[in-house]
Image 1 (cartoon, rainbow, N blue to C red):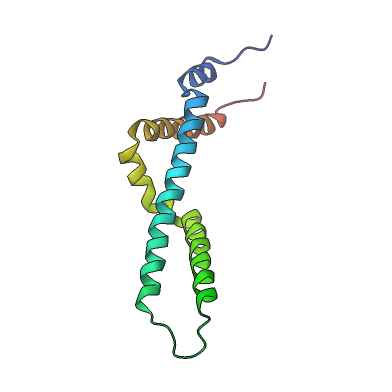
Image 2 (image 1 turned 30 degrees about the vertical axis):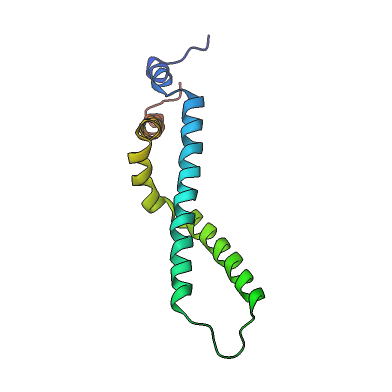
Length: 122
């Protein structure tokens, strides 16, 4: 007879609905990527505008195109690495319901790992 302990079964009932949590994760991921890319893209564009074109060795239109593609790639990489640092508070303010779902899921999973240490082998 294999039954769940009361502690484990109570944790399973407290867990937010999996589809809602998955959707909240997708929304947070897309929001973080958008905010990060927008922020870093504007930062790189502003940085490039402060530097003038050199008198010699300028690549013309090809260089401008390459720079814009390079800046876009850099913005994507920067957003992926550190976009969540400033996008997370904005996400919590913009999407409070999804932020609460993710916070509840985080605390539930943290509590379940803490309670694993209380299990004993019979």
